[in-house]
Length: 218
Image (cartoon, rainbow, N blue to C red; front, side):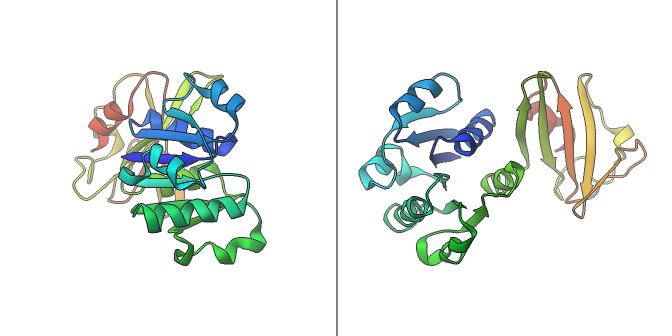
């Protein structure tokens, strides 16, 4: 998936980090030269200087070929302009925008090119879920102090794990099943739990990749 993230603040950087780690092609754009210099080489994304409200900057960042644009600047006006350009000028299939001020939420509609509006108070995982869309396995975050990854995978109707208990799965050493979320409610990963379609599995590992987790459950 090709992704353009506008705004390299804390949230935009985290989005670029997560989506880039999930092997998406990510470009992160910000006006602040110092911030861009600080991030280059430290996130799995191309980091560019520029005002994403400018069509030429968005085009240079790859918006013309992007599958997703995420507007995460600290200004609602900028996020709306970026969304409108992405949708109307570059025909981006999916546009997500952060709402900084709840009073402006009513503006974040398809009329302004916004497919999904995410309140500033929403947790990072909500925005990641919106950004990844149909992707069934994605690294949600890296707990740097502990040196482990939290990876999410969603059981589909075609998953090999459907109808099997957790105990029946060949889970490699180093992968710990932390929770099974079913119907929006987390459940303890009891070995006898039989997996169903739409179950969401959260695993913790210090070494496993998304591909290895996918191989177990999908």
